[in-house]
Image (cartoon, rainbow, N blue to C red; front, side):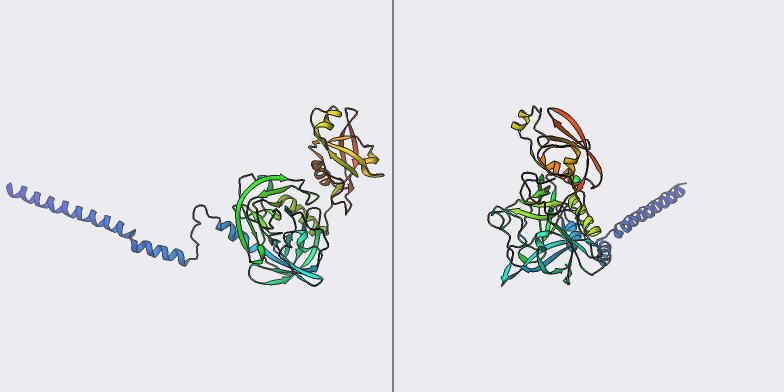
Length: 391
């Protein structure tokens, strides 16, 4: 009996030892599969596959790498400008700064953005205004001659064309989703040093009455923008285009942290019109207007200083044909309230010529509605009677 018990105990001990050893080697095998050597092999395979490591926190390199190939440098040769210089504080034509005079002509630089793979490029009108020769340098080093598809001085935008297909094109963002405080990147060719990316935030939206363009609705940013950045891209943190860099506020000629960009919603519409027809079509009713100040509101017995005061009506123009008279206060266009004269200019310009619009005016303290057949805004109506131009 004692022998049987001894045999049972020895057998149990051996079996238990075998089980413990098996369990131990299983754990070692699992550890081995995650050993540094195996990890190194996995890392090597990942690098070999060409996958770039993820961006570190706070980096915008993915956005920059996505947008930079779509931004081009523009070199022009033109007759020396006879235009009056811009005020020292507000420099719209900073693409011309740093130019080198060469007799009666001068060469200048700026930037542009590829908007379609078939060679269309969006830039500022002042970058190519009056140019006899336009050269475009791509990010890959190629240089091409460009032709002007069309320009729109009232928004300071122009579209160029190069004879090349399969170009990297920018992705358009949404202006209505841009908010103050959003991170933005400005991409261009400042001072001719080469393609450069600077960062900042959106400082303000809807900046107008700067006296730069007829139609102003600028994005203000503190991203460093310098001479040569004209026509370059303002992109969001994902690399989507949200604006075309156009002007800076500066007393020295360099960046002071106040730059202005044309929002992509406006730039895209102008671009599409130019590509389709070579020009931009805008509505017009033939009036001169001014803001309704608090004093004017009081004298007209208005509750709030809103709307646009009709200061003059063009003879035989759309407004006169409809019965609108000087002294009327325009308060609505197609049921949309008018905030001020600048708002009226933008709303009327957005109307389609030949269509009929319903305009509500205050006359003798009572609202009256007029049906106006919208005309086509004539060229050359830039910077008319202030403060709103000639809608």
